[in-house]
Amino acid sequence: MTVAGLDVTHRIAFQALVELIDAGTPGVDLLDLADDPAEMGPALADAAHVLSAADLSSAADRATMLTYDGPHAPVRPTSRLTNHRYSPLLAAIQLAGIRDHLPTADQMMFRTVHHAPRYPATHLHDPQQIRQLRLPEHNPRLPEPTPAWIPQTIWPLCVPEPLLGCTNHALRDSLLAMALVKIGNHEQWMKICQHLRLPATHPNRIGTYLRYAQARGTWPAIHTALDSLITRLQHHPPPIDYQQRRMTGRNINLLTEAVQVGRRQHPTDTGLRTLTRQFWERFTAGDIAYGPEALRLDPDTPSYADYRRLNPLRHADLFHSAHQYLLAIHMAEGPLIWTPEQSR
Image: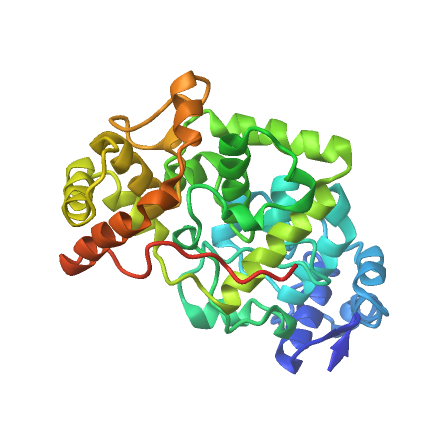
């Protein structure tokens, strides 16, 4: 059936109706037969008024009984998400009414660029529960995004158009990777940094970066591009577990050993440390500016600038052999590198 401009199941519509009646009758127990049913009359009329709206925005204007901290309010402090059973239809209604007023982090978390915003599911573990808390148009059977899908730095071909002219690629690409993890995710920036093994200063830097994008008017395009990318990943998840790659990449001795195997098959005069840095970047899809301490290069130094001018494709065969070595000893899965299909 269609409710507030959305196609929903009868269960979802009935749940929303009951919650709206309950929110409109404070102090009345719907299950207590001693209460006068007539007291629910006005609340029933108000609920019907909300659900008969032509679209989500109109329904949001009518849903005055849904206070921010009320028992049925779909939007509440992030710290309380895990204990709240909510109606996906009421969530979409309330989020549609405030989407433009939410901070950028919340816009990403609730995926407000969609016609029907949604709650994050990163606090849920039961697939059946996730499906119950999704509208049909949310494609509830698609896998939920996970940090394991996201490399430390976003894939070069996936940088949103407004940011292509940015000169600080290391910072730009790592902050965009953080933003990508945030899509549909309720975790705080510091936790996301830990997932991606980025510096503890990045949570502050991304806040500045997002405010800058908002001030320039480029944020909507950036947000749309990132959300579109996550949607493509849901349809075609990466064949690489980047979380596992980051863990394996911490073992410098193992990566060096793999590079030495490759160098024996493809001799070169390039130094072992440089080759290991280049292999680490390809293997983890990271930036050596944020690599393990033994390999890391400060992005503000001439050494980093000199390193960036090197062409890693020169040693593609060597890195292929090193990767095959890791596959053979079961320290890696999937291809060495991968890039999402492009839609632009």
